[in-house]
Image 1 (tube, rainbow, N blue to C red):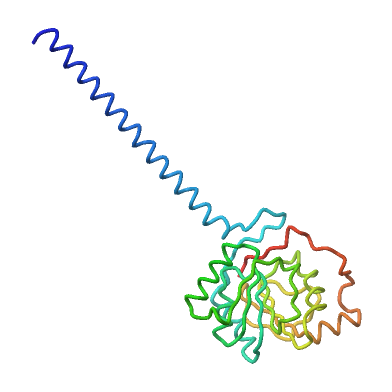
Image 2 (cartoon, rainbow, N blue to C red; image 1 turned 180 degrees about the vertical axis):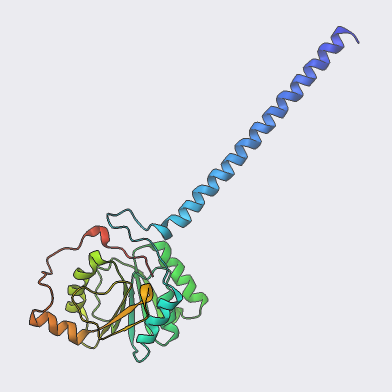
Length: 233
């Protein structure tokens, strides 16, 4: 083989090797882009569900258990009318209540969860008797509700006592899940452990408020803005 042929073969081999390296590089960039894009998409979808916002008191989305939902419905079995779930999460309490005949609403600060709840209610066939609102509970009015369900945390329950006592009609019932209200006396409880629910009668806690038995708090006491959102049910 002549020197010219050897040189030509060498150039061809180098060209093929260079082209192969370029192909691998392009493939690597594509794979990196796909993986990176997938991670970003996963974070975008999952983050609002597990950490609705950055705040001093972290209130992540913690779905209500089947037992908790059952206990809520059990203590409200003789009730009817309007119901609101404060911090409605993925809408399971609202949807279950609607199936039992309530005109049920959910208040939730996380828009992803609100949109998902609306879709879920439509899929379950109760979209006409449910509504979900992107709302800060401290700015909402509860005057139109005869039944209230709340999955709260101790840091905000005392302030919520005053708000509900001031706004709810005297015929209302309040169901607290996971944590009871600090000064109200429940008329009954259902379940045990984390599935316990406490039932409160508006006539009782409003009477206590007027008689001075409830903790002396002013409506001007602003709640910590970092605890404004609930995503726990």
